[in-house]
Image (cartoon, rainbow, N blue to C red; front, top):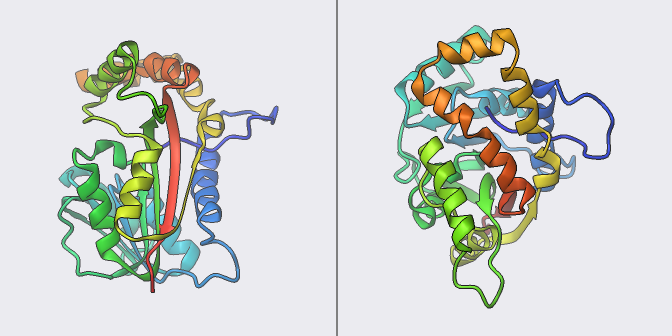
Length: 263
């Protein structure tokens, strides 16, 4: 259930989530200068925390690249491989069970290291960033799109108690470890001597996502699907208003952070 990228100034419908999710991929590539015609297109891609492989399949088709996705879930990996085969991409795209913090790849293997909304699931952000940097090829690009909390002010040592409480409730609902800020990610990338580091808060572009998902869940089809999906999914659905609250109060930041590995 990846976020979509919506135009906050547009009056167009936000109901086409698939189109918005594709825009999220394209805008991420544009931000990282990967989609620029003057840039060398990636030929090898790793999708870290791939889910059922939507990004991997899209990127492989766009660039004519080979892509490998990793996930902790055997069910996700099986489903992702089945979808790749059904779309005639099994020769280009593959998925396997692996830990993002201990990736089974050699150093410098991938032109594009892609992490779409998986960073928030990583219990050790430093190790996560270290592995992304390790498997990136010299000159390769790293793209991280993830949930963060707001940057702390210079005089602050931690988030306010109410902010910590709200994040804890969200983390409990979605089985997430502690979050970090965009500034924390930038510092971690700097510690790896990566270049062209840039970041941006895209919260305003994803703000319509959660209300739209709630509206779709309140249809008869949505409710019946939700009730049959199990307790964990229901628990996550009930936490959606907490996400909306976090965005409205500028606590939650939807972040993109990109960089390049030195050649």
